[in-house]
Image (cartoon, rainbow over all chains, first blue to last red; front, side, top):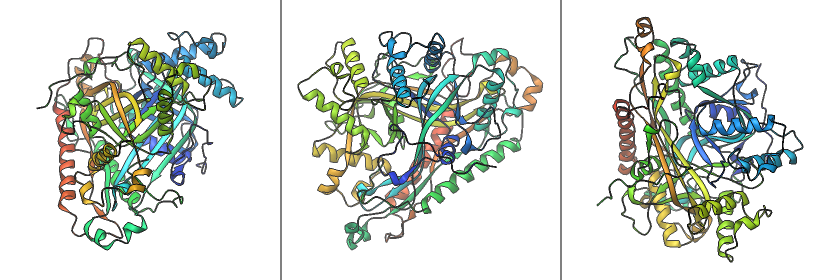
Length: 313
Length: 313
């Protein structure tokens, strides 16, 4: 039975400040946004540059220990990444540092080559502040957004998008357990096309298992932000007859479309298998219906000070 | 006349390490990916947390000083943001710090409330390393990705996406010049729907101008990564007759679709204006054609060590 309505605790770094009536801390809602995104944006700090790194990756929420757990009742995100990629190296080094005697990362501020000192120091500080054991892994931020509609109002300032965006904060470590890694690879492959895993040459052989890396992210906080409904204009504009006669207002729904599956030059399977045809149809139907639903769903009440939507916030 | 083939210099933080045959440093190609994205992900570090902040925003490349400049010949990104939002506050404070006597941000490491010391210190270090004047503004990373296709091969490990992703690195400051701000607001509104600005009650009034904020990002580096074409499998699998007879291989094209413009409850303009009908049609045609083009466009040569695509990297 799904656990109802679990929410992430609001942390200083995870609290939605602007239009907080649009905020959501519901695990179910946030994880749904993540799981239906083709890509998530994974950001983390690295030494010697003020710029965070951001990488597009495939990610899915799941629980290896409780595989049948409800989407709203898991705290782990699996990401597809490479052993040799920067994020994995940083994550492994950080993980190793912790195991090698548990020195405080703050002590390592000057050894930029070995660990991300900025991130590590801040992680230690954050952990200390909350009186919890120092978390293991690379601190990462994972963001995903669906645009559901272009919201066209009378004035440029009231223009907006209908959108559902989600951000998760957690600590990433590489998955080393073979059974868990296989399980996560199947989870992620089937997120690209449902049932694809068992319709390929699976499981991967030993070399493939070694060359593929999976990150597990223990989520510590998260937030979502959702805008839905038709445009809304200020009273002065909404009462301007000449303006109403001149400017079209409404919503252009936006959704992702999967096109016709197109065989590779070496494909021999014809026609396109049913599981793939069904997946394309089902995914398109869900995407289109969601955009229309978000268009007609009224927004939550706006705060008094939030008299204007601008294009995005 | 457009300037041909300008490229971003490779910086340690901007160089594509994995599948570098898929990398692009072309301003034209990178800016095209940014400008055709409904949203970009803006990431930056903040004090007192190891987690970067990531916000979805609307962004467009442009040049206020040379408005007719080619997309491949500009170094400024305009972002739509709020005065009260965290990013603007950080950016303003940082900007202010620089103007208030030019103290080194490194000296402020302990005053977390006033400025993002982590970012500032790293920015100073980066600037020093390149022997340039210390850059002004908040260091941010801007990322956008288009998924063009699901690439389905014989084995899970060779699965991939066709995609075009772009990352820009730069320093953000709020736009205070009224003429530049107006110009940027028009640029961004027209990126949502071409010609929308002059078909609304524009320009914004004084209160609207004050309540809306625009960030200008001076880009210092960038990179793109592009995967196109049909799947490719290892020789052992591609020669396995039973496997070829069992597993469908090919590409499912992916693109964004704009649906039927749907009038708001207070709309009076009927039928839907031509500029909007044309925009929806044109945008859908471009998106669909791009996905198909990317499917049939062969990939660049793969390095010997890169014998496998996994789902994403």
